[in-house]
Image: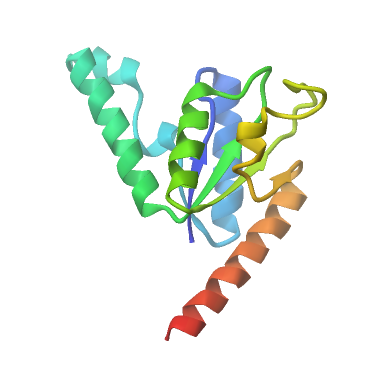
Length: 152
């Protein structure tokens, strides 16, 4: 199983949380693609003297390529609003028929205690703790291994 982690990555706290989630998932036996670790950062690329527009295109292409390779998406739903890039990634993966689920530890919400229906509608489940995340990932692994056995 290869999980794409769609998450905000603008602050040090967000990036630390994302890294913690990625490490947790990898300890459960799944591969992850975390854009902040695998795709790069625009500021760093421009800081090395690369053209900003070419760098933006390269980062976009890196992430789209990774989404095409991953079979599952985990979107981090924390924050006053859900990260715009993560919303795009959810829509992209959902439109490809890939499994999508969310992780929300933040009590803030957009509409009457819920997310926008276009977000929630694309998610198989929303978990709210590392324990729940671990249990759900184990379910996904069992489900995936059943599919592999049936296809043999």
